[in-house]
Image (cartoon, rainbow, N blue to C red; front, side):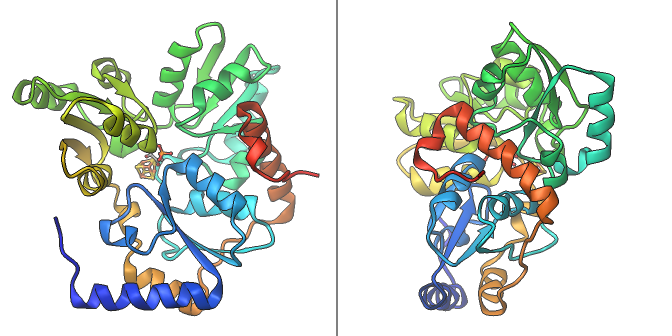
Length: 317
Ligand code: 13P
Ligand code: SF4
């Protein structure tokens, strides 16, 4: 396991002191660099991060992840300072649909409901009926009272959901995550041949052919839970490479093999950028109120449909 350098140890101490001084919390996505976990108040998937953000009483939330995730926190916390340490940390999948394209898609399919994956901009969320994450996409789609559903922007997640919810007609937008989409069946089969006893765990942004081979398909936190709770000792982990590092760190007694690609946007946040973000209180993520009001409603509907709302203060008046 990687050991911390003196520079990292000093930065970690300074970050902890700043957090206390400024009443700040640091929320970190599962894919981040392992040294960043050491300053985190919470590490998790998109749904867990939203839930943590929604219940924090901190004044400043440093959202160590990519832009759409910090935007989601800013939507849920209009009165707090939400900071993204590296403003350039984006998401290729989120960039695959614009609000205008979604409006046109809706016109082509009158009477359909729109389920919008959280990997999207606030403007796109504002044009949608409900948000979902990889952890609740099936439950949200099933519960949404529309028979015909436009699912944006990830076609792989849409296909996964369509198989679990066959009673609905699901029309997918043609977006995908390039990190997950280019993983091949051949890569997985080679890993399985070398490790025949390993359980295969995959993220639903992978293509259907990969998901068919998997023993478990889940969000990043769901993948961690499966490995924790499984009696199995060996796992082939198919997603962005950072999750395997996190699994190795948190479950040293088990063996993890990775079939993965790196999301460079998720690696843009460093201890240095978190430190600077706290010192300078930058880069603040703010959403125009006209967009935020509508996007927040789609979020609130997600919480209502999945009954997570019981723990979360009402966000829509
Ligand atoms: P999770 O919500 O499962 O952590 O996924 C986020 C993501 O960006 C996957 O690529
Ligand atoms: Fe976006 Fe894919 Fe990176 Fe996740 S792994 S943040 S979906 S580009």
